[in-house]
Length: 258
Image 1: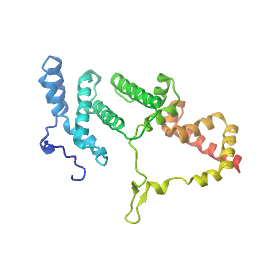
Image 2: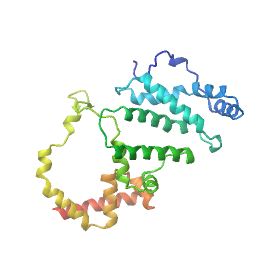
Image 3: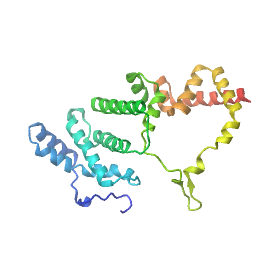
Image 4: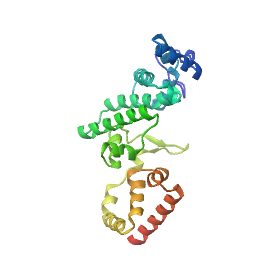
């Protein structure tokens, strides 16, 4: 397989037709008027979109032919639910659905045992994301998901991460032409963690003494994993303000644990 190219059995990817936006809108117009051959043309004219998405999965252990078929299912779902009146391009709407379909396939075929309740929550989150995307044309933020599903934001990342394809500890993660760094090289030493219990206790106490907003921002940044911009949006302040509060909070914690 050539670099940056996905090969699919029985398909000459270089000959796949690509529709422009005007052609796509015309086909949707025909489809809405009962011409169901237009749907086949829409699918065939967007297969390269599926192939472009599969490039990010080219290093996985899954068969590309299988992932292609799954991706096409996502494309068909996008075509079935696409609303021309929203003013979006089909590709903008279809990409998250295709990625979601492929990721669902990978999650369902993972060899790692996951708690049923956690897996159910992950699918509930994914289902809500799909419904929200279909309704509003964009992905919901974590705080929107949390409010609608009545869960904590950290549960979102925890649930979705539990369904990711496992990675070997011997997976190479960096190579600058010299010695390769493997995932195992980055794993924490449990012995060192056990010797730092006093530091962890001091850190917990320090977090209880700083201002609530400072603590909330540190938790959002370093436990939930939000970006400064996401925190700024949820608090109604600027990213620069979040950055200043975060810096002050870290300095205050440092002073308290010395």
